[in-house]
Image (tube, rainbow, N blue to C red; front, side, top):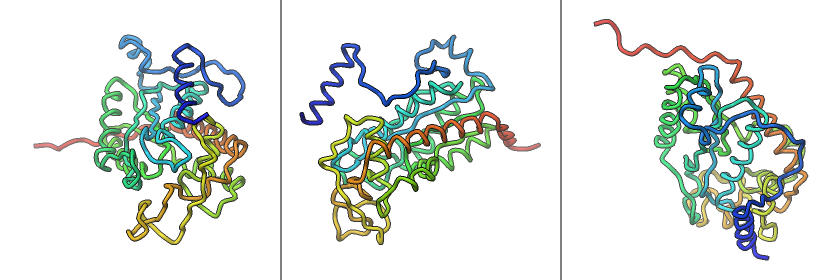
Length: 282
């Protein structure tokens, strides 16, 4: 069956109230709350100054080679969000499907905001929620280039007395990644990311189209045209996706979840910065 047919079948089953299977794990009661499922009266009760607010960030349209969907990062972000919702006492705000992804423009379907727009998107969302009480926010980040907008967003919010932390997806499970990785290198749609998706959403992966596409001597955005400056990648892969396995993915995903939960608890125990005074005496 073609992958598009499988996706259509899953959507049809979901419409009938039949959910696809998730990776096995112990049953847990949900500890967090989804903001979007509350009334404003209920939201007022949970948006307190002690609350930790989590916002998942994952591209809903960004190339991930011929074997992974454009929505790869969105699927990953939503999965990780659900794991956090189960395990942590947090308020989970609606996810962000667009941000700063400048390295993929040459691959059809890929989208990106300007870095300043991506920064301001996060700042504006958090400022509006912070006005009701929360001072601690965590962006569950599944991107790499996104850090270039999240760092200045955190600095801007600190001036308002708001503390913003976020996931560094290359570091949160780096130790386990080093243990399982067999590829020479790579950071995009390769062995590690493909393995994670084989665990999170195996229906979204077509391993028959996985490839090795790795040119470590080059720098810059991915390029389909080998004559242009940047990293040539005919497939949109940077690394070796053929080495991916579900077991590698299980180890990396579970380490990622543990790392994110540690990040959140560290944030909960941190004091928000003092807001900067505006202006001065006349």
